[in-house]
Length: 275
Image 1 (cartoon, rainbow, N blue to C red):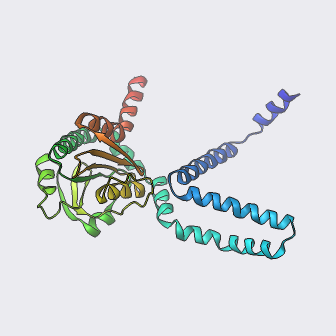
Image 2 (image 1 turned 180 degrees about the vertical axis):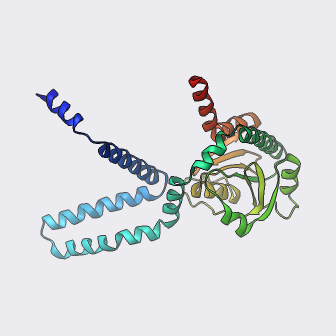
Image 3 (image 1 turned 45 degrees about the vertical axis):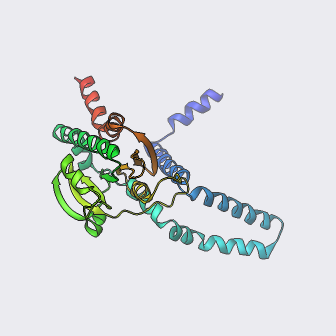
């Protein structure tokens, strides 16, 4: 009997039911990720207590208290949208960030070669900055475009990516050394850019504004950020609001290759299997 019930249930599932399950799974995934990675986790606990208070006051016939809770819920959604506008914007940008053209550009063999060369230049430059204890902030743009930052605060260069140019930009007496370099399409698109600072309470106490800026742009986009500390020479990488530290040239190159060429490597392997 249980087998017959299960069999009938499986065969009664329609294609739209499968699509609905997939969509719900995606929504739950991004909601959990959003709550886990940001201060929304504490907000969720507060909402839970409000809901519990609402039902408890209704069950105990505390009409005034129940009315207060109900009034809070009526304006609660709007308040959440206002309070978490930056985080919600970041979430929506990341959900809709990867376009078909971006995917095609990633798997293009010519672009793979250029990206690999850019990784070599950035890894070598970061190692040299580390040895010199020269601060640097290099943002590698991915699917989320950073045009508002490039045009709003930076100096547009559209120059070939090279170690000598990066050295000149981040020379401590150069006018653009305090800002970030944004690398897009494997060229230096802008320099001297000012980035949004992260307010995450999990940021280590021994890092400064440069690291907060790197984390801030990684929270608001899918960019990969390479940071060199002016005080310690430590090389760090910020991705998706998380900071990893203590890289050298070789480990940095491997990390950037995994982040920027992972999709293309998987595509190549699939094509070889298909052949």
